[in-house]
Image (cartoon, rainbow, N blue to C red; front, side):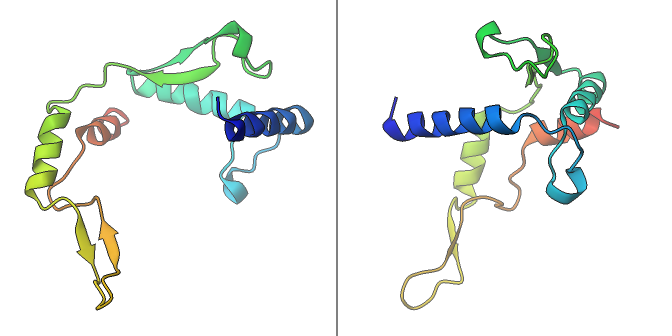
Length: 131
């Protein structure tokens, strides 16, 4: 493990112990969910989209403020009619990376995504399952 990562983990652990979990909703102000809101949102996601499920995880890493059987959310078996290789081939055929607003000095914005016709079926599936 790198020193930087160890220092970050120590910092993160200390902050979590000192501040504790959020108990008051700050979703509208900061976009942060409280523990009850997260559990409710997860329950709704699991109910509406069958590929999502709650997991208990490793007992040594459990957070005491979450129920033992609802430590994190995971998605499995997300159907996709196309394989990743076909996305790459389509991306390469469309020109892959494109430089936008190229100046005389050779600097400009690099568009690495958003190529016309490039789509991800996982997103459309998840949106479709919520209807």
